[in-house]
Length: 185
Image (cartoon, rainbow, N blue to C red; front, side):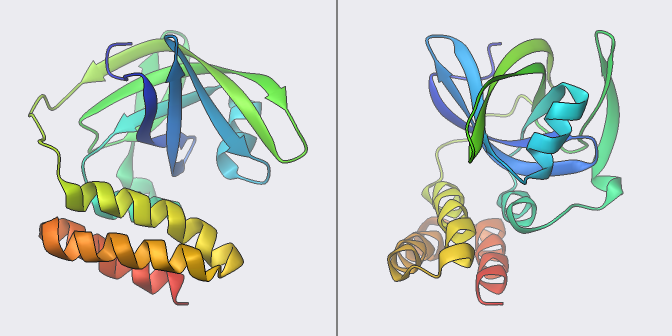
């Protein structure tokens, strides 16, 4: 499992025909996810027992998957061990995990991840882009903002939006426009 590092790794998780941005927490070499009840990702993990971590560098995909579903043509089939899984076609790399619910509360479940297979498809180096990182942060805040309309979250989104405008490329700016469409509905 050389693709993930210590801390929280932002990926697009796929389960069946579902994709969602998720943070995989790696602590002491042990990867886990925290998934909230009522999500397709948790429902699918409970029924299927697997998840694919897609490493992708397209900020628009992060925004789209945070607020909605991707069309079927974004996915492709893979086989990992004895499992048939779905991943994103345009991933730079992917990791298939078997999953196990480690703990469950009334609000969320902690899912232990056991790596089964991984592949690097695109080995280009991506330098740190503050605009891309800010899209990730603004998207996380945006998912919470649409539920609560908390003005402090909106301030954080606006802060990250200014960084996207200053530091991002055209794809980050496109993702920002899409984000604002989702949070102002």
